Image (cartoon, rainbow, N blue to C red; front, side):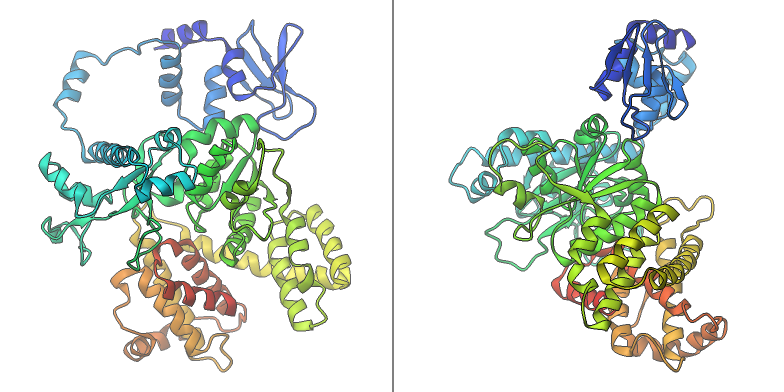
Length: 578
């Protein structure tokens, strides 16, 4: 195997490989130099030696050969790097020995691999159906694609498709004798009521999950189709969710997936930044407009895991969430998580008259480049966007705005904290000392919240894919929140707000909450709630607020599962109250 590594290095030139990632690389005597891809800098400190076939970054101390460089840039394992570069060098890797070969052939293709094949097959079928429809220019689906600038090339590039009505994909799967239960597991078919386990699977009751919708496949880090997002069409008359996504599964984990990753990864590496948007159509619009370094978090729900994946190839994010209240709330959450793990967040300045990046780009004329978009450091943008409230003569309005701003400051280091506190003091006309005191208290509360969250997020070994543990944790948190509000003299939540929380948590956790409403729940669980209350340290006045914040965070992260307008209104009400 060592000979293979050496042979690859002999066939591939390190300068050629690195230039694919660092287009600014230039000759410097016998060597080459470029700005470091691992650290933001103005003076090049990254050196490549063609004679020795190695690189060294003087600003970070990182160095090695082409294998090490690819591993660092793409976050791949050694085996994955070897396979990637062997293909590039047109070298066939050594085959398994006869014993291993025989063993491999005797193993039946496992369900996971077959699931990915079914997903690829489904995406191809959907895509073929749309391309066939586009031959008829008068078809309303064709007209919609023209209106959204979805050219044939873009449709092929993103594998956009259309799902006909009347269980088209199920009938086709039956024709080819595909495993319908596996199609259910990967999210192509649905069943109502939803089965609790495999013993309740009923192929007769199964139907197409996506019907009469445009579909866009979602790719994982390996470039495989792992799920779908879908959209209703303009002629829709039935009250259905506008967007419908694949459910969480062993194939599709939304918390670890970026839409557009497979097509944008190289652009992000080369430009050393990523534009992050909410919707998949925003990503497509960005590609149409020559911004091929854009990815989507697939709605306002995202996780620290997603950001850590993005951080592997860039530390700089241009945030372009929608201009509505949900987009602004998600932007604040994104800033806090990203900043806490060492990323730099800038806000793309989308004028108020445009609802999202797609709409904004559509209004522009001429060639668009990344220089066309105006951006500001996120906190600079936030202070300006909330200037009216921060300067308000209504003390209640101003106090709320200041506390909300200080909540964002919680993730800053000492130097940035002092700098932004001075900016806030100048803007709000509140003394620096008072703001510093409030900031200290806010940071202490934030630290306690993070500690509790960490305790909730920690899992025992072997629970990596156990999604039920997340729901069990939130139920425990809900019981504590409910107990602290029912048995204290001055609760922060009245029964009406508690009822709204209960509605959403019940919706998100399936059958774990059995009661129809909060009244039934409290009546049936009174004794249990009293016991829980007796175990809580009621001297910590901040504890109920932390429990509330954890509950809101859970709802935020799972908003994509609250598909109807009524639930969304309930969500906005509790957010407003909090």
